[in-house]
Image (cartoon, rainbow, N blue to C red; front, top):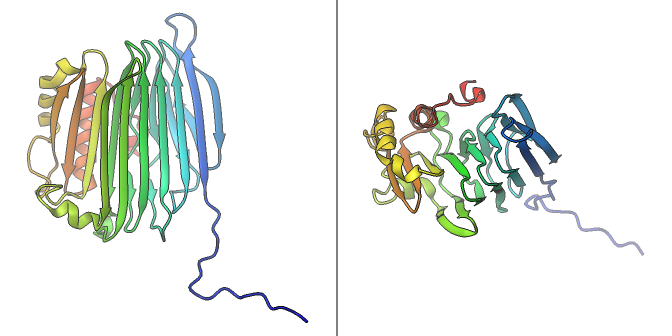
Length: 291
């Protein structure tokens, strides 16, 4: 007697092979006061790191060879900067978060900065497709005297297709500690019809893109008026998210400075922020931002 195996029906989704990308990087100065050099690098899955610019402050460029993040994928970045080292961290292109049929994708970024270390965290934008589901975290431990500049930009839908997010999930959690003490914590959670929620005046005023910039470096709180002047010069001081341009506002407290930005689409926001960050840092944006 033979038993027939059940044949999956047309609506049964087959099991998928999910991507798990892991990156661990440790850098430190070559001798006292020397240029920063690679000490250890571990890569797995589709995560790869390239160093197109060497010198006293190297640039580390993250490459996702999978071409994007799909439902259920998991990515982790761990950076460890030894005392006195410096690094610029960016990505080779915008990160695309594809539509999900249920599972959440996760991105966990963890950073440790030793005494006097400096990190410019400036990845290119994240683009959420309709029905994308993403949970992202950014956890930073700073020693006394360490400095962090961080920028994250997110586009809600593909602007070229005039895409709206009728359903999706975006959770973005930031936590920054200095000498073990929590000094900055922020969580953004958008669940359900994200584009409709962003259309509400009290939430996004019609924004299609948003960004956060954080300076958690010594002396950051005293740069508030300078930051506001640079935002105006970069074209981010007016226009409103429902207008043609993007707008931003800066505040400073607890030893750090934060900038919140909204734009009707990713283009004006990205361009304005690139001008602002370059002026604020006194350094050009990484070359991958130009291509």
